[in-house]
Amino acid sequence: MAEILIAGLSAAGHITPLLAIAGGLAHRGDKVTVLTSTRHAAKVNACGARFHPLPPEADLADGQVDECPDRAGLSGLKKLNFDITEFFVGPMPRQAEILTELFAHNHFDAVIVDSVFLGIVPFLVGSRAGLPPVLAFTPMPLMIASRDTGPAGLGMLPAAGPLGRVRNRTLTGLSHKVLLGPSHRAANRMLDAMNAPRLPVFILDAGLLADRYIVPTVPAFDYPRSDLPAQVRYVGAVHPLPSRRFRRPSWWHELNGDRPVVHVTQGTVDNADLGRLLEPTIEALRGEDVVVVATTGGRDVSDIKIPLPSNTYVAEFIPHDVLLPKVDVMVSNAGYGAVQRALCAGVPLVVAGDTEDKPEVAARVGWSGAGINLRTGTPTPRALRNAIGAVLHSPHYRSCARNLQTAFAQRDGVAEIALLVDEVIAERAMRVTRQQTDRRINSRADTIQR
Image (cartoon, rainbow, N blue to C red; front, side, top):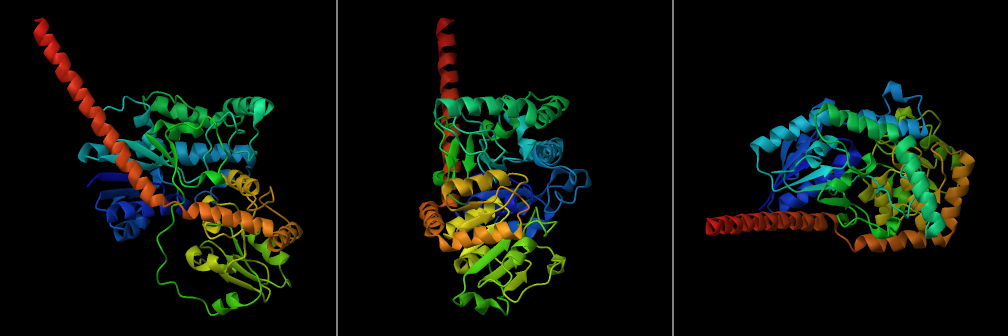
């Protein structure tokens, strides 16, 4: 039985898979502590783990991103730099203080940390003496630098071959020094203020400092990299715990008819303005021979400002494990978790996302053939209608989605992560044993020489 600490930000896309991991580890008998927001305390306890509070100043909550007034006028790389600096780098000192206290009063055999929970970074760049093995879990696509891919954050498709690698090296250098340089420099300034060593890698590659860098997808939904670091491990999807007590709405029987079902969602973070995707999709399919299921990601249904046509049904939230088996196409703003849930169900996609990591997710959807990337976060009803129609009527997209469904079905993310935990604990034990043996040998040698 191992003692495991899991640290994660409280936004749904970050904490939901970590709670599934906590439940799986607790079920096999490990003692698990979860460091996250108090609003998730009941969920932590329900999965068999012990809860430890993460205060608001050290956290990123759902809705906090879109409701930040200083962010409202930003777009593109300026917005991405702002997000990394304010929401991930800013809380680093407070997170590190909490981790220091936890390490001082508990013996943990391993730590699983949200890869953007940057409070772990001062420990990883330090001496690491006494630090338990650390596994970083990314709630986003793998965005580390590679000679085979373009720079992260721009949604660029990979380019192989000599010319492609020249392009990748040039643009990655530009991104690290100029485009996303402000984020990296902000992280180093924060580490300076904390009297910690500076980052030996670029800020988006910080997960590589951990003993393992866990990527919750399958290789078929990521770009091939000939220089993939050994500590990066693909584990397959990490599904949320099965939904319970879901009460089907009165219109649920409409999903069992002959009309195709189109589901549209803006997720739980980038959903302050439902006019970006939800409303245009409803308008696009007004009068079409389909059933539209729109979910607002927790927003009040009254936030939809357009009249609802007769073929459209709206809810704040419907569990995807219940809904997706009835869906023919999902329209999404390219949230990583929602996109992978659709692919695990063999559902092809139309994606339109241009904030946070969404351009990278959307690019992978188009690259994999499992859907259409509209390359914008604010598509027109006409563009949506054409794309949805193409996905519905072309077997190519469904076939690619089902191929990915098969690849995902062959992996059990939680079980594979549990094996990685065992692996790093065993490596640590062997390393300690070797060090003890070396010390004994050196001590005997010193005695003989005397």
